Image 1: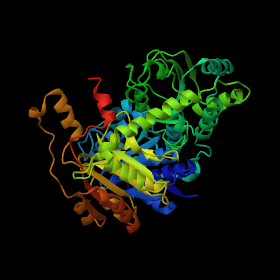
Image 2: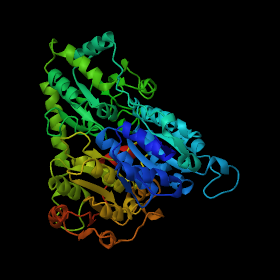
Image 3: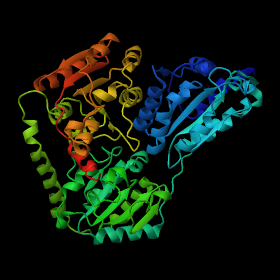
Image 4: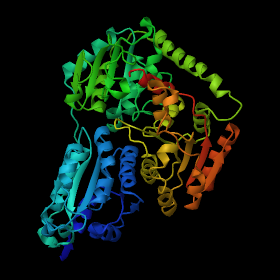
Length: 557
């Protein structure tokens, strides 16, 4: 036995928590952590900006349904990563954020990157934030942070690590590293609630299942499919649950917003089984457009504060989504279910009609490229197991129209914070988590400007991510909002230049190509993936069209 640093204790505990990768940007405060990771073979993907490291940890967590870890040094390193912390908090993404800070012995000395209470700043946007002041307590507190981040409802935690705590030498014989760091227990539904849910579902004429992020993070894909098929109930999904039921499954209705296509009174759901859904933004809150106000709601959620928060429920079940579906499946097999074939066909017809409405846009021959053409070409020219990242206030709304996913965690995009500019970071995390799967990042020209230097990160770490830039040289969502609210003659602060993003990427050592005609886009995507390098395809698209989903959102204002 010998002496070890606080940084070494941290890394040893993370290894016990099965952490296999960390994202961060070096700073002197974090040096002992970097050195200990080097000693233990824990790879660190070092980014060009701390916010990209945070988003990469989010992408890793969302792609793997496990803990992501991000590090940032004191002061500006910490403040740079705050957007990622807030994003993870609102979307319940399990990420451990480690922030360096000035030494405890330097309190109130006006030293470098001090004078900011980082724990106080992080507390409102984390499940738990704590400053470790005794090096011997590092293993216990790291284990506590991991358990809190990965227990339902999952979410981010922050550990603030003063430099003198990290560099302190501790007798390793005096410190015990916990053997069992991650909990593996799930809240079960009560039997009477399951029975009541079955009876409500059987009595409905037009039931639907809405699968949300909670269903994805609980790993409920097999159980969801089994129950939907047994009961004959169509399924819709939100931004994190795409792929739980394959897109080509006859019972899959599409993303939540496509429920608005069921406009006729006799063609709207009369009961909704919401599994791991948080009502609000993606369900249009208290409006009638997606979930009819007259619909009965069975709400299964791990967090009791979400049940009845926005919409009244006929039955609330505070339990793990996967365990609840398992219990429903156990009852469902012995039940006689109504014939929902006509209701299923109604939903399939609505999908067909939506595609017909977009056909004219898809058939456009002359430039500029219609955004619907661009995302359709992407969907048609990526591998079946590709992971797609959607980033941009309008770009991802277009992708929502055409995305086809047959694997859970294959489509990662915006959540409740609506933070644009996170796409390249998310893509880095998703690619690190899945080195053998192709990763494509669809990104608006506004959004890519936030972290365009991350092409350097991708090149250095040999991450062959293909970024497709939807370039309409505008903050398009803002411009369209101004056109509606203030008028087309009152546009201000929304114009961008027609920048050569592909050349910027190429300057970092990536593959770059500009596309001006739709016939060029499919071959360009294939060439980019074939290059084996990070790539940027800069696509000239038409600014004028509004994404149908965005129009639905704007209709509330």
